[in-house]
Length: 404
Ligand SMILES: [Mg+2]
Image 1: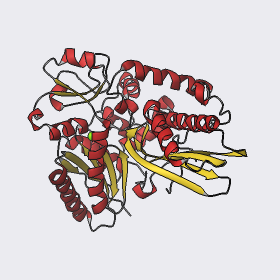
Image 2: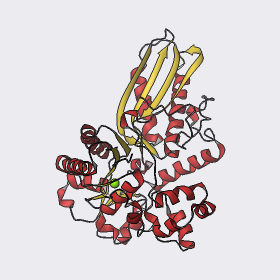
Image 3: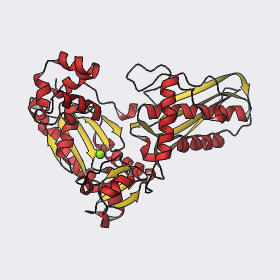
Image 4: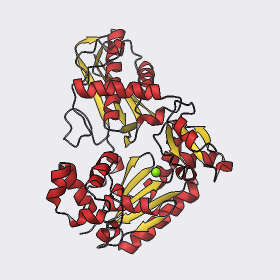
């Protein structure tokens, strides 16, 4: 039976939030990100795009390309709150949905009536979001996630598009291969060098050739180009989390040791978030005392994957939870409410340096292992780490609980 998959995506999300706060910014070219010259563009309004501005670019360059743009320092806390507002409305209206990033959602509307019923339903949901939050949002509706996502991108800004069953291939055919999700700059260049510009060309090629040129990715791209995708919508109530805990050989009350271990676990999990391009919006700490009583405490936070944000928050939570002055048998931490996203969201304050530091540290870790770079205060914790990437599609080994 065919599925009906809805993809919803808030338009230029950070920009829209800033315009909701300050309506006079409507229609004004806008750059959101780190405001110093060394900052990075996290989001830019449509008005700036004609000037060649795009997100991820150094703020300095963006200012040179579009001198009339207003530059605003981003605020992860505000964006997380507005993201939650939208999530709540979707949660009310749709039984099965996935929050795939801070501003993107998938919903499985299969069996909710015939196709037209789903389209009408999606239209009403979109209107409701716009009415209640003031956020422009676009959607695509089709038989799978990939085609719906492409349809959303074609519908933007602030519009909607339905691809009827059977028309997936002809919808995709005239588009640039760049529009296929997972075709990044590098793959795009490879395809261009082969003279492939349009999706149509891939559709007419045998899958084997794509595989020969691009390996396993080639197969996936070929399938996507042909409108084939079986990825399920992962329900939000089964949202992923990553966690780590440590049971001590001998119960301890050594604060330096305990804190060192918690810090090492937090640092390692934050690295895993970044490696998987995920952000967390909820942190938790668990303590089991020698009498086996177990306590845990969790806290919502603005979306983040940055050590300098997460570690202090975890330590604060630990301090507020550890109250018994008793021997400790086990400590654990967990990051949940995970969505896809880049840790640039936490780098509004500055700077390319911070970004480069993370990238440099993570590069060393990617090459030499999780424990190749660690905080001095976390060095006592020898056995933390050596974990596998929980987001590489392989079955999780230690982490990634699905039902939290
Ligand atoms: Mg968006």
